[in-house]
Amino acid sequence: MSVNTSFTEPWSGYLANAEWPSTPRLVLLALINIPLLSIVLNVLYQMLPRSSSRPPVVFHWIPFFGSAAAYGKDPIEFFTKCREKYGNVFTFILLGRRITVTLGPQGNDFVLGGKHTVLAAEDVYAPLTNPIFGKDVVYDCPNESLMEQKRFVKVSLTVDKFRSYIGMIDDEVSEFLDHDPSFRIYQMNDINEWGSFFVLNTLSEITILTAARTLQGSEIRNNMNKGFAQLYSDLDHGFTPLHWMFQNLPLASYRKRDAAHAKMSEFYQQILRDRRASQSGHEEDDVMSSLMKQHYRDGRPLRDHEIAHILIALLMAGQHTSSSSISWAMLHIADRPDIQEALYEEQVKFFGTPDGGLRDVVYEEIRQLPVLDAAIRETLRMHPPIHSIMRKARSDIPVPPTLGAPSEDNVYVVPKGDIVLASPIISQVDPQTWQDARTWEPTRWYDADGVAAQANKQYEEGVKVDFGFGLVSKGTVSPYLPFGAGRHRCIGEQFAYVQVSMIIIALIRKLEFRLEEEFPQPDFSVDEFEIYVYLAIATMSSSLPAVFVLVIILGLMGCAWFFTPKGANQTLIRTSCMLTLSCCYLMWMVTFLAQVHPLEGPRRSLVEE
Ligand code: HEM
Image (tube, rainbow, N blue to C red; front, top):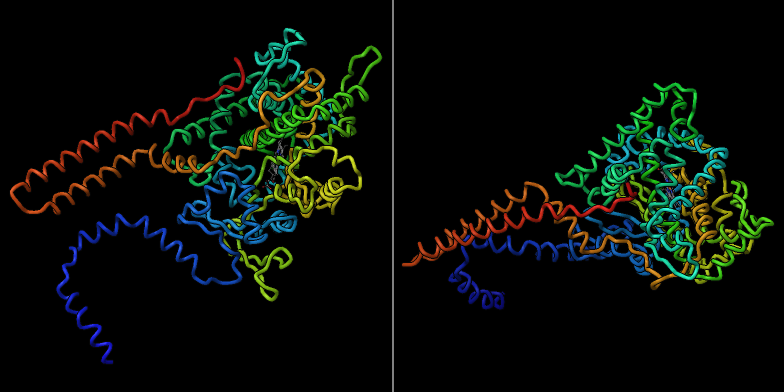
């Protein structure tokens, strides 16, 4: 007791006499320190003991922002490091959202094989895809309708159609090689010279041209001019993390996305009206004409806008996935002369004619080309275009203990509202499953009893389930699932295989490839800087910042007014502060207005007019 008295007395005297800053000064101090304070509180919060049934949360410094930079920069490296530290199940914060990741074949099975009433794809993807695909299709309709729409597309992509597509794709590639300026040396027929072309740009153009010619129909292919390319590009620029975070913002990219969707939808619907009106008896052999004849289970035919929006969805869903796969395949082929040679030899062996030429390919023969098949599978193993597959948990979901558990007698529970994420690429490059996992080695697919062939067998020949669009192999537990699995398994798989194969065949037959520079590393392209820019653009390109900054300036003016000490120069100091702040505001406004326009970057045209 006595110790206490003697200790507090001197302090009580000090505290009584201490000069405390005034309340406004304290408020100002607190405001300035809010960012620092929030970081400290966020770190302390993460150190608090938490329910052991919750998956561990990846440590992050900045609240809301979370692990966005690490994930955006290189998701594979991020997941691999987190797996080493936390195991197969962990949660990370991505721009305010909780994402629970489940890795490995069991993790894939957990997400892709989950019931759609509990793990919903539309709850995650809808904000991103609905404005691009449009109303009443894919994720803007009940899951049962999506399954029916997948059935409509599936019956449109019959073996007969694929047979006719082979020749069309071959024609398109030949046409491109004969006329595109990047293939000038080829056009000059000079076999001693080497030409060069930008792989991704060129193969993206070839991909969209071949998809338009085959899937989309002749009207679309004939209209593949700069106007259409611009519409496509404006829609494509709507596929960014910013558009996923905020469905609508007063930004140019959003306005262009919506205008492009409206125009493209109308374009397709006009074709539908024209086709009905022409009644020429001639029927196009494409997906549109097939969709025009389909009916939902309740007998209702597809409405024009639904057909238009399904076609937009197919165009958008198939473009990046196929073009990135073809690009990676060609890069690896150029990097491995032995495989390139084997691919050419395979063509000669299967299609060589007595006069030394090569005959046309027939659809049924495509899958019987072991070297080509291995090259495509190996490319999809190492570079599946979709690295993160997400669903939203509609209720608390217990995680199977074999996938990950806090202890022997406890299980993790994914809380309702979390986004659950599977990343098949992690199991596709897992060194515990694959030898030299990060090396592109098509020969691993030749051995019928090898790991690769077995994984593929598990993927393709597992238990068959009909989710509403015909029987598909469930295949969720395979370590190799480039086209996803379960009810959301890719509907364009067979088409993509035909398209990728035929483009590679057409190129290999006519050209020899080698790399001009070092082999490129995957570029996931959402780096730290870009995320900051997204956030900055979200704030900058609207009219709100002008008001927002004005309020701050007025606040600072108020502070200058109240905090200027009394004295002879008080009026002079106050006036100087006011003038300085006003000038700053005006200069900022000029800079801001000047920057809004350049924020809309230049667009690359896809096709020459
Ligand atoms: C190499 C090429 C392709 C790859 C690797 C690929 C991969 C995938 C994957 C992994 C999914 C599952 C997404 C999820 O579960 O959330 C998917 C879904 C989908 N794919 Fe593909 N895809 C390719 C080409 C195509 C093409 C050419 C089309 C159109 C003709 C297409 C149309 C779709 C559609 C509509 C879905 C959504 C299905 C649903 O949610 O039920 N894909 N794709």
